[in-house]
Length: 93
Image: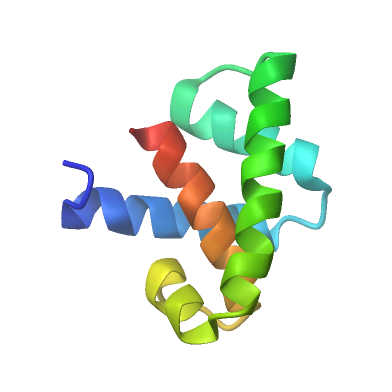
């Protein structure tokens, strides 16, 4: 199901929602965990996901077309949305 259309689109929607939050990364991670797993992340989970998102940002900043493909539709920063989309995919899977 990893590449199933429903999961891809769900991850894109969650990524868009997380990227749109005006809060910091920890609050975005908390929101993703609550939406996907109905709980707050443990400290080590938050730290690991924070590092993961931080690694994705420069990757997609250097490849804007790939960022748009991963993130799907949206008006805002595609590399940021792509990073959060991948974080959402990790939680969904």
